[in-house]
Image 1 (cartoon, rainbow, N blue to C red):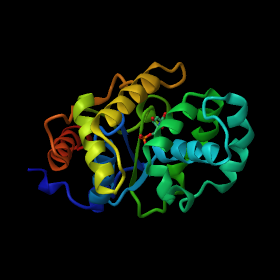
Image 2: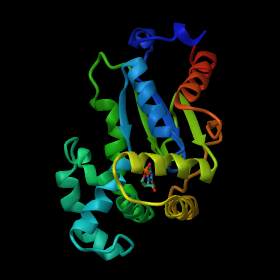
Image 3: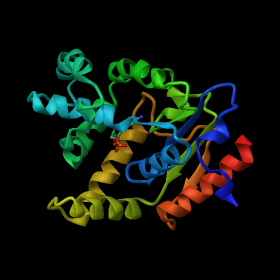
Image 4: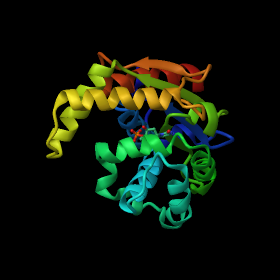
Length: 232
Ligand code: DC
């Protein structure tokens, strides 16, 4: 039934650029879902976690502590100067060490404020033939794009998420073990959900998608049904 929701043309007559907000914890499947939706509709995609990963990596590379506000403040302006598509492709941004540093800098209020415009502006940077954008992160539906056309909060049990992350790391050649990955996921969940500033939380009007027993195709099919019901 969702086969009819194909291609960029279906959003051609919308009177504004469509915004899809995908939030959720680490390794919930939100990134894959966001990428698949963007590909399906020809939308532009911003993985906002990479912004925090980029800063976390920059802080570590300069020998600073990602939990120390003064340290982070010192390198923030320099980071904003080098922040571009190319920098966000740096392979080291994908490691768990960088993910953990990202989670620490992401809890700092002035960091979130500095990255707000970049994220909100993303939609305006797209050409007329791109009819929408997909942003994925932790606070897209609550803070960055509270007026998004569609909000999905993707979740899965910590064990399932740790298994996915573990398999991915092994595939990429990293030497790690499952318990270390599970611990890291739980620590990051606690930090991302427990912080004062823009904590990880589903927006009131978000659709909750638990992917514990779903693969990427099934998750995509669920969201296509939601889109069909709510956007058409
Ligand atoms: O999605 P990710 O694992 O690549 O994100 C890395 C960290 O960045 C995550 O632990 C929390 C933070 N983050 C955030 O606070 N807000 C976002 N919109 C995206 C990521």
